[in-house]
Length: 386
Image (cartoon, rainbow, N blue to C red):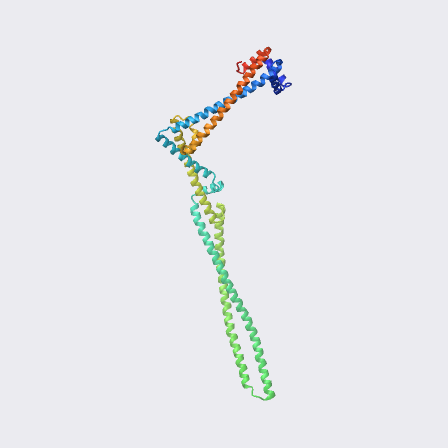
């Protein structure tokens, strides 16, 4: 035997197996011992491969036959047993859909933020309320500041108008005084030159001067009063603005601390984050619950099927829909029948090929009687009887 193996390796280097087989088909006589060993080795390899394929096909055929037998057992169940199976299958389908929906969800909170929310879970409801109130208070402060800025603008406008009027009155006083003096001089010169009576014009000039003086006095008093009131109002607005700005700073600092702590930028963001956390936590709770229920209904289904001597009960966990839908069950049966038919055809083909290969060995032994012992020895080693 050792000699044959050594010789086989040597022959493989010089003899092409396909060419050897072609020679064998042309003539099975007159082959050398090396050629005979080479050809037998090729046929043996084919036989070994065919046996492996036949073994696999037989195993598949038995499995498919077992599936079909299980299917028949399920269809022959009593009504109460079948109802138990259907209820379990229905619950398995529903729970599986829920779990797939949860697993494929894209609206879940990121894990890092989930852990942060989990850490502050007890305090967040109160924090949300506080942030909302603080943000409302900050908006009220901004509103007050805008109102004060408006009042400050009005006061500054009134103050500026009073100052402009004060300058106007000063100019009016100089201009009016100059005009009255000019008129007096003019009237006096006319009186000296013409000797005309200028008493009435002089009285009119005096009345004009008195009117201007009275107007300037009253307007100046009003402007002074407006300036005084404007200064008071402006100081008051500035004081209120400073106080409100201090409140704004304190409020903003408090909010920024909370924002930094919870890694958010507003009440709205924290509220949405909290809602997602609550929803995610509820989904996780339901997912864990569905896992327990799914395991329960899986056990129920398998125990019921095992009780009816169904061999491969586990496979029905993954095709529970067929237990509820007659069309699906027909489709499963049809698929199994087609599969079994193809396996049967493959078995028949491989068995035919195996018979041909064994016949080929017999022909080699008969055609080369001098090496019949060698062929028989190699065939026997591989469990082939000639």
